Length: 267
Figure (cartoon, rainbow, N blue to C red):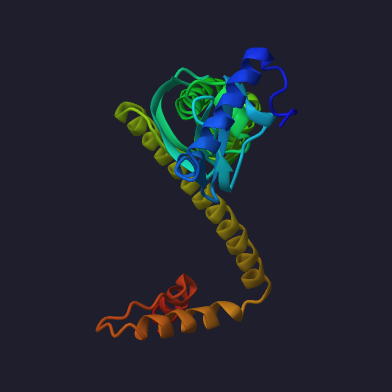
């Protein structure tokens, strides 16, 4: 008891003693007002004459609170999930976008959360909004769209270091949605379509080049082997006939017509 009452002064000693006497006189009725229940996920910060008792939180379980001299504040230690409202930001490449997110945090020091900040939940939410704008303002739109995980980790690290003095530990930050103007969306779609067309033309040109090389090699093979050309004619005829056409066009070499003309003249 002496350690708990250290620094309260003589008047404090007197008031605490009177509180004990009042509890003893009115016992057992007063015991119902002095005993408080703290749940497993809660901690109670007890103030005795305005000073935090033992410099640490009480609970879980039963705690004893003296009437007239003691007051207490319960702090919830469960993880809190809050939504960051849409923030209008200007990226590094001068693009306006609206970004919202989700932040998850929990209080790990009830004494700091009560003694160092007025409203720990409101302060954490406002700081999360400011940190989101500051971090995203240093990135381009492409980095923002492609690197959501890295951006979220950067926001979490900056937010966690700032809330440590409040007894708050940030568990996770997620970027929920990124909305950009319709004009910018159309421009990005046109750029992507042009890039796809360019790639398609390059692929087609590469195919033409490979096909021309293959035809060149085939012509060299046909030149080296004269018997290969009629065989190629027969193969073409077979391919055309397989299409169930009523008319078949069969190419003939010009020298055949020349030989026929000579024979008719001689006759």
